[in-house]
Length: 214
Image 1: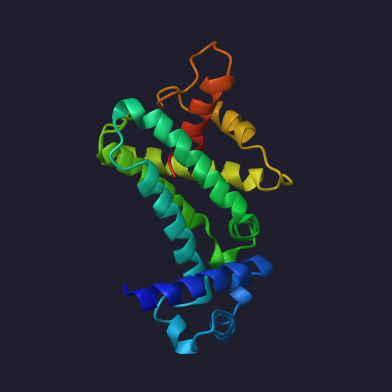
Image 2: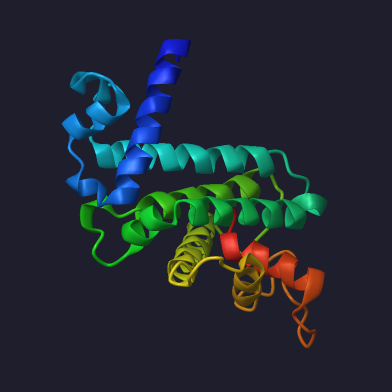
């Protein structure tokens, strides 16, 4: 993508985030998006099939950048810290776009649901950690591994959806501690049975389960 295309995409990205924050993205027309971005209507289709598709592309791009920043080439000994860091970053991303995610994860999101996109991203992050041997899970084959990634991803999304019902400022540490209590014992950094879940141990365990990686 050349410099001109990058500038156009940046304008479209800012416009669709603004419009999707103001109201449902399904109600945003291509003409309205083009006008807000200062581009021709046909230009929108060069980047996405619809405003909803562009919104997914923008959010997915931000999430992918976090994955690349925190999870690529992570050594097993560093996996827990990496997942903590990416979890916090993803939660900040979600909180920054809270109106969009509350609408996109809600029961009335319909075709504009962000759940599939977020689930695919989380699953991809878990699978990346497995592929580069940053961690191991109790799976006998690829189907088991996929099921584990899906379980962690969709469970995390459900917790995030509920977390977003809290008013701002939202307590990230409290969220991580809550989900940490649900983390499987085999997940890196999970609380030791009988130990108190607080302090640094809480952060580590909670973050791992909370994101199933971002």
